[in-house]
Every structure is written in structure tokens, then in C-alpha cells.
Length: 497
Image 1 (cartoon, helix red, strand yellow):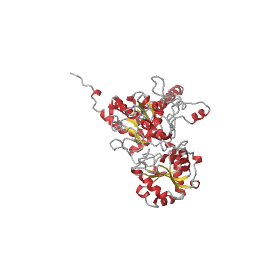
Image 2 (tube, helix red, strand yellow):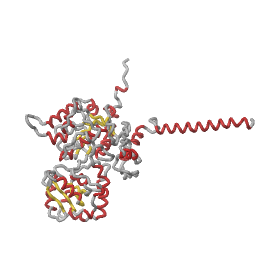
Image 3 (spheres, helix red, strand yellow):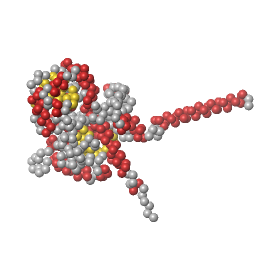
Image 4 (tube, helix red, strand yellow):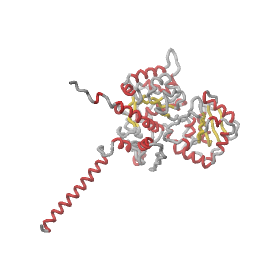
């Protein structure tokens, strides 16, 4: 064959090779970035799920994971941590656009959310009606498209157990087109698509405001609502499917749900602690411990006083004479009340009490969190908001998110039996040098945002941390559900011969 005849053949060969290379490259690109990815769907969801973990520091691409004790824990961490970006959350350029008045919302894809949540449309008497909200006829939920439209919370002591309010608002806002929030939990309308079933009953507010019989009532509104709730849930297909094990009920006040808790004990509870619950009704295996909503003002990192600007060594202000495990408060009071650098006095929320307490904590190196009528109290979270190193004297306390937060990095734990020994506590605290205290203080400033409730919710705040804690409880429930489906006859109908 002549050289002239070979030229077209070579050209066609090179052209065909180049075309094949481009085709292969395009196929790989499509496989990587479409729903037909070669990555398994479960892994793909983990990669894309929202990262609001305790280990994700705002405005930083650096993610630090501690040594994790087990494979299961590693999987959980991988599910919640991404390479420095928040799925379904506005990016930096979007924030700049918002500052120019050009608000933008990233759509939350239910398949990429950390949790898909089905919420019952209970009548307002169970939730926002308890706040005095009245919608139009047949209106179940308030408009949550802006913070100015949501029904205000009554505040005061009611506020410390207000998790039910913030979580319900967050679910409602997940379907609001103008609300920018993380994509950690999204409300779905079909319960068969849900990971968890949310029960929107404001149980703590119901107890605080309606636990006493008034007027011609024979039964309090609180007891009546609990009875109606039990009847409703027991009649639902969703409850019957797993006996309520995938239901989430908030009962943060220790006296909330007193009448219904034993009947609904198979559900997951969001609690302050386990102080007034038998272990078969509430336990760390199935339930979530949530932080109190602190009452004192949150101080910013810039105004947080360092070691030498905090003249008070130890601070405590609150009820001193308590029952049960709280008896230790009065023992410590008599040991510490006359010490010159110790503030240990009775105090209440009334008058200027909250402001005074906030100012005192922000001026103290250490803040005592002593068991009261129950193992936990709001005082721990007031101390965190004030960047005052907490000293926890409560042997039975359970702490929020302790599976991902190491409290020993910013708290001191003192056994009650040691704390009541004369001189022990003060010698311990006075022996802590400035360098060690400053390290704990620095950690406090890093983690304080994990205990903030706000609307709309923000990455890594208390609302998102609770949803993450719920997601870590879901796997055992899903395993049980999948195992129960193994021999379902409806999967393989028997043909009659």
C-alpha cells in the first residue's frame, strides 16, 4: 500500500481512538455525578448527609476526629462529617449575597437529609395552642416563614424546658421556602418514607401551665391532653408497626408526661435526665438527653473575661434546700459560705435574678453545678453560656451528646462524697493553675454554640445536635424493622392450587 493511501487510514484510526477516549471519560463523569453512581446508595447518603458534628469547627476546612472506640462509632462520625462543607446549607458566596439583600435558600433533598421525619398533624391544643396561638379555621400550624410570625414562647422558667418548641419549629421550617437552615432533619408527608415519627406535644409547657385543676374542671388540662394523646397514638398505623419504637416524644420537664409515660415508654424520649424514670421506661440505650435552654445571656468570645479578670473563684446562686440528692447543696453551703473568694447564696429567677446570676458567672473562674431534686439543672448550661468552667457535683447525672462531646475537656467532675469533705473542694480548685484553666476556658468557647437553641436553627446548634443524637438511635430500630420483614407473607403471595 502506498504512503498516500495510508494517510486517511491513520487519520481515521487516531480519530476513532480519540472519540473512544472521550466517550469513556464522559461515562466515568456521569457515573460519578448522577444518581446512577457506582457508589452504593447507603454510602452515597452518608457522604452527602449534613455535617453539623461537634467536631466541625465553623469557618474552617479543618476537621479533627478523636480516637474512636469502635467501628460503629466511626461509621456514625463518617455519616456526620464531610470535607468542610454543609450539605443543603448556604455556602460562603450565598452568605455574601444575603448581606446584599439577595437571600437564597438551598433546597433540602429528603434523600440527602440526615433524618426524614414524619410529624403528626395534632390539633393546636397539643402544641401552639398552649401558647395562646389561634389560627384560622382548620389551620393546624402557624406560618413560620419568618421569625416575626412565629408564636412567641412565654419565657421565664418555662423556657429552660422549651425543646419541644424549637424542634417543632425546625421541622415546620424545613418545608418553608424562605427559611435558610441546615438540612439535618426534613419533614416528610408520607410516614412510610420516614426514619422517625415525631409527636408534637408541648408536654413541659402543658405541665407548667395546666397541671392544676381550675374552675369547674374535674381533671386538669394536662392530664386530659395526655389521655387523648395515648388514645390517638395507640390507634395509629405508625404506632402499631413497631409498637412506637420509632416515635420521638419530648418530655424534658421531669414531671411532664407523668400519666402517659408508662403507656408510651416504648418510644424514644427527649429528657433532661433519668432522675424520675424507672429504667424500663427511660434509659440511655433508647432515649436522648437534651440540654436545658440556658436563661442567662450568652457572652461572646470577645467579651469573655480571662483568668485574671475573674475575681470570684467559685460561684453558686440558686435554691439551697432541696430533697433527695440535692441535700448536698446545703452541706456545701455551710462549708463554703464564709470563704472570701466564694459566692454561694440563695437566688431565684424573680426580680433581677437572671441578670445578676449571668454577671456573677461571667466574673467567676468556676461555677458549681450541684444535684438538686433531680441529677441535672439548668445551671450547667448557664455556666457554659458564661464561659465559666463547670464543676459538676452530681454522681447520677447524664449529659447531652456525651457520645460525641468529651466534657472532661471543659468541666471538672467531683464525687459528692469528696466534695463534702472539709477543705477538699477549695484545695482542688485553688490548685488548678492558670494554664490548665485557660485551656478549659478555650474549649468552652469552642463548644458553647452546641447548647444554643435558636430559630432558624444553625449548623451545630442544640437543635441540630439533638437531631444528630436521634439519628444515632435509629439504626437498631431499622435493624429490627428489616429483620421483621424477612418472612412477611405479603412479599411472596402463596398461589392457591
